[in-house]
Image 1 (cartoon, one colour):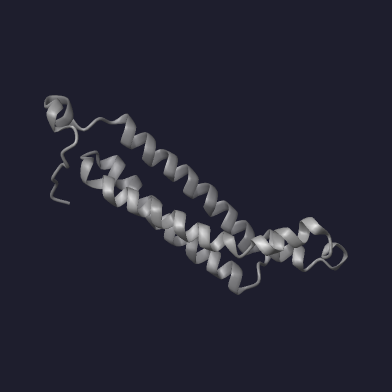
Image 2 (tube, rainbow, N blue to C red):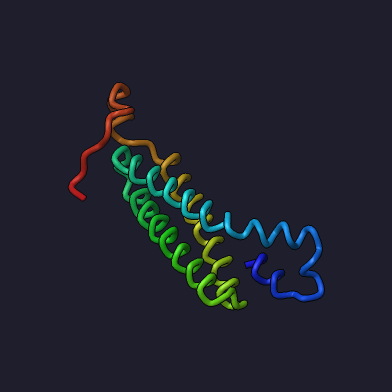
Length: 130
């Protein structure tokens, strides 16, 4: 978004920093997709180790927000970064970050019941009907 905005500004287009930021804009989607896939892989890998319903809920919310963020980012690029899509993209990034923090705090804050009763089972995945 910043690269698109700066690229449209005639009076500052030739400044070195602006040119560097405009060149970097290709990396933003690639990094966002890679990090999103990594988050989704981590969540789905760790989901089997949690019997906590809150943690499972936040894991679904985070995955949904990652996909939504990709969609908003695509819309932002497709529409050539109008202000409203930039703000929506930034707001959804903040919401995703908050949901990610809540998922991690839920996962770390609620010990697995089977691990408490049986310390040797700490690393064994839990089975659930969901």
